[in-house]
Image 1 (tube, helix red, strand yellow):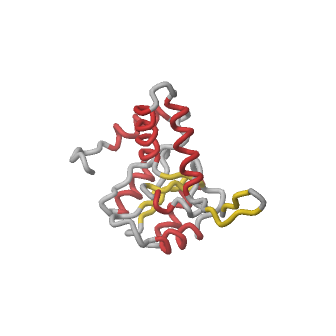
Image 2 (spheres, helix red, strand yellow):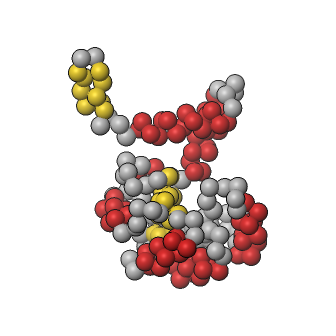
Image 3 (spheres, helix red, strand yellow):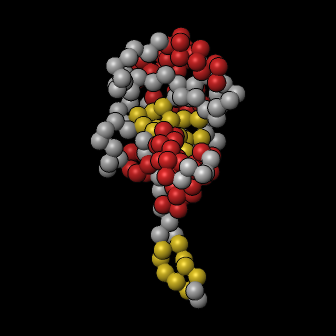
Length: 171
């Protein structure tokens, strides 16, 4: 959307086919401008990618997307149209409707990483953070830099709540 380029669905499907079995998951071709009917048609046309629900989509669409997830790799994306702040109740309500067996990936939802039901968060952000660390610490491999990013995100929501016998307590 930001590049102004037109996405060719058949070329995207061919690209995805090349990466099936190599990537943990591949996102379905989503119309992030808000045309949920177009997104649904794309998800149904190509069976390799996982679908995404947006806060601008009708709530009943989630049932259709869950059905697609059950047939596929058990991944569902969750996305918010900007501005993204102040939408935690929508996220929580949506996630409460998704079976536990489905992996939930949050697109650009780092601000909501404290919600335990989010299984992964925007990998582009992780990639960029890993590259920043690699630039500062060039003796580390990119995999090691990514491990640091993951550890930082895991610790980010923990807060010191007190000390007891020289032990720091976290929430």
